[in-house]
Picture 1 (cartoon, rainbow, N blue to C red):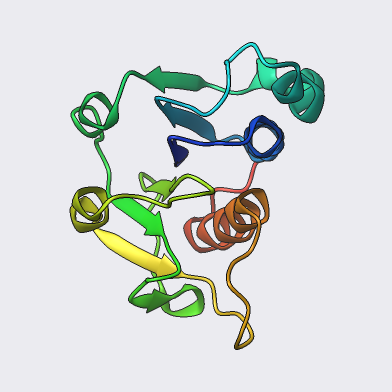
Picture 2: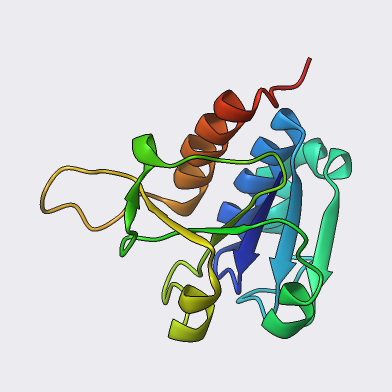
Length: 149
């Protein structure tokens, strides 16, 4: 299982997701362009020394990423069709999240094999992307028995 970030905007969120991925044993795909320089200190600060423990693959663009995906693409979206607690995950799923400011374009949304929404109280717009990544990754690992030893 992997986490994929589509054109992320905020280095601190990427760092927090990298830390979560390191702790849970998940790889991370970064789909460029990103809204910050990869060497940005905020990534290192948020990811701390955990970044070295993550299998990170950077992709030049969406087409480069989509061309190498083996499992299903599970898009986390506020426009999701399946509520998280009703979703079924597989060990080879790629959990895809859009950029903090714009989400994903329609073509990427349409390419997803599964679209998942995290239920929230009425009137709330969205959770922080790093929080969402942790919530969905935890449920996916629970279902697939993929928790690290």
